[in-house]
Length: 476
Image (cartoon, rainbow, N blue to C red; front, side):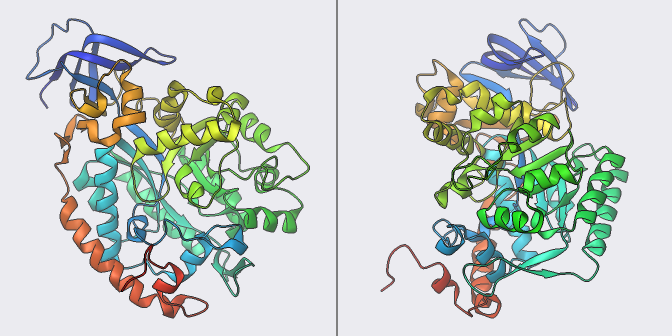
C-alpha cells in the first residue's frame, strides 16, 4: 500500500504513552496497516499527501458493546417503550414480542448500523449477535474492525404477565449453543484475519447456568480473548439473583470465578449502592476494580427508561476500566460520549464528576483495553492505522478553540470527514465508501413492516406492535 501523509494537521490527538495530548501543526504518516510517524516535519517518502489545514486527526473510536444486527429495526418502536411494572424497562417485553431472526433483516440492520458507526468515527466494534449467515462477509465488505461475540445462554426470558421475569430453560443448559459459538470463533481465529477476531459471550448472567459461565470464562482464558456478559442491567435481574443466591449479580460473578482482566461486563449499572437497589452491601465497585474488570457503559437505552449510572466518575476513581458502547439505535458513538458526560454530572450533582479527557479515554484506550489490545484507540508509531479526520471548517466546529469539546458537545458526526481502518479509507467526505446506506435502510424499512405483522403471534398477550408501542401522535 502507498504511504499516506497528512501534512501539518491543525490538531492531532496523539498518545504519549500514558495519555492523549494535543499536537498542533504536526504530521502523521501511515503505510499498510500501521502508523509510521507522528510529529513535526516528516521527511520520508509519501505517495499520498493530504493538507492537514483545518483538520483534527484523532484515533478511531472503540465501541465495545453493540447489537447492530437487530437494534436499528426498532427505530420508531423502542424509544419510548417501557413497562412500568418491570421498573420501566421494555427489554424483556420486546425480546419476547418481536422476532428479529430474518436473515434479510439482520443483513440490512447490520449495514445500517455499521454506516452510522463509521460516520461517527468508530473503527472497532464488539458485535454481540447470534451466529447468522453472512455475518463476517458484511464486516469484510465494510472494512470495519470487528470483535465478533456470538451470544448464547441456558435460558430465554418468558413472560406470563407484566411484573414477573420468567425463564424457559434449555434441556442441555446451553451447551449446544456454546459449542456452536466456540466453533465459529475457532474458525474465525484460524482465518488469520487482521480485522476480525472473537469474544466469548454468554448473554445474561440470570439466563446462564453457573457451569456454563465458568466454562465460558475458561474458554476465553484458553484462547486469550475477551469474555463479555450482560450483568446488573435490570432491577428484576438483581432481584432474581438475590432470590437465587442471596448475592448481587456482580457478587455472584465473583463467587463463581468469572472476573478478571479479560472480563468485560455490559452495563453494570444496578450495583448494590444504586438508589434503585439500595442493597445493604457496598462491595460491587470494589470487586470490579480489584479483579481488573472492564465495564461497557451505554447510557442511551437506560436514560430512555429514566435510569442512570450513579456515577461514571465514581467507577473510574474506583479503578475500573471504563469503555463505551452503542447498545441501541442510533449507533452514534460521539452522541453517546456526550450523553454519558451530561448524565454523569446530573447523577453526581457535580460538574467535575467527569471530564472530556476521561470520556475520550474511555471511548478509545478504555475500549482497546477491554478488547485486550494495545495497538488501537491511540495515535502512536506502530499502532494500527485506524484514523479519523474531523473537518474544522464545519460551522458546528467553529470556533475550534478546543476541538474535542467542539466535536463532542456540538458537532458530533456531522464533522467527521474521513475514516481509515487498517490504512484503508472507508469514509470519504462524510460518506461511507464500502456500504450502501440508503439501500440498506430501504430493506430495513420493509423488514420492520414484516416483523410488526408477526408480533401478535409472539407476544404473551397477543397484542399488535402498535398496541405494544403506539405512535407518538394519533394516526387519523
